[in-house]
Image (cartoon, rainbow, N blue to C red; front, side, top):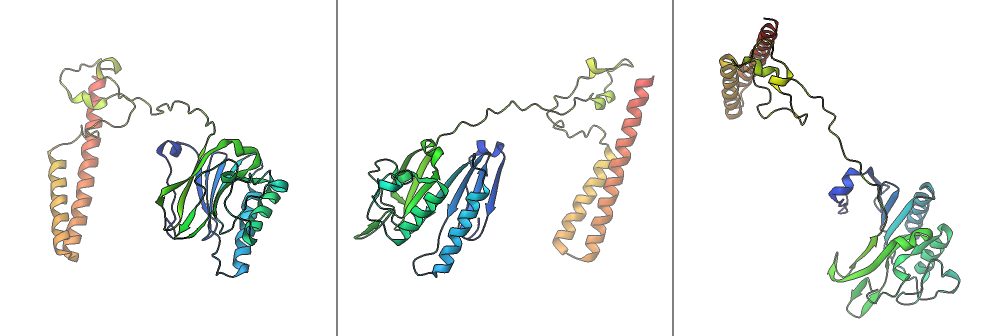
Length: 288
């Protein structure tokens, strides 16, 4: 989350290769596979024209850097009216729009022509085209754009009238219909291991092997976290460590801290010693 803007990613898409790139405070992108989705927020009308031009140049750079065969979806709050006029710009402006084109609308059209992108929410009859409504003032100033050759993949572009992200702006949504590669079944790569810790059990003989001991499921450590080597000395040392930690937390003194560090060190030594002894004993059993 930065400057109040964040990205929600469906849990299934987390399995795909993805990246988030914050170009600046006004342009942010999400890359999923061969698709790049851009969120753009140009300066408001009262801002300097130079600042507005910088955003357009940066947006040009982003699209130019993206390989031509990859999808680019741009969601923008342009503050401009693309207008209903179709004629010479029919490839990028379907004409299903609200209002007449203005100066900022011309910037949108020039940008779209130069980079051959289409305005998706003007490509078909949208009865709920208004993206801004405040009293008698209403307009369509938010657009979803894509490369012209991918326009057929952007469907069901609409404005949610009953939902405002920030009043009086309305939420614009669209469906992107693309085929994702089929995920291969993930296989567990962990190696199976003999349950050596069972050698402490009386029913095992000198011929104990995999068939008798069994193997792990290769799904990770057992629930007891391999504490088969645990003994009374280890148990007491860890209890002492726990008590020392409580006293340090309560007092916060350096003396209590030193006692805790010493107890912690002793607990590690006890655990290492007990585990080594248990392993040696297990190997002795297999030899006899």
